[in-house]
Amino acid sequence: MPHATVVEQVRRLVQRTFQTLGIFSATGLEETILIRNGYYCGRRFATRGAHAIWFCEENQLKFYSEQGSVLHVVQQVDQQLGGSAQFADAA
Image (cartoon, rainbow, N blue to C red):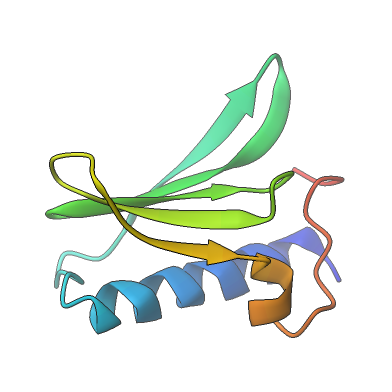
């Protein structure tokens, strides 16, 4: 699956989860690409009052409160997206 498609699906999963947690803001999401040791490793999605970090290699999506406490963790993100996503190989 093309990486742009995977990112869009993750973005929608983040939005749905924020809505479920009662956090999603009308201002939308601020998105940042994460780089570790010069390599793409994920994305950070922030909205008013919370943020989420998608760790590609770990295949995890973690949601944090404004104070930094973990609100929710999605293990095996690829399974949430239908099982066909591969994350670690694209930027």
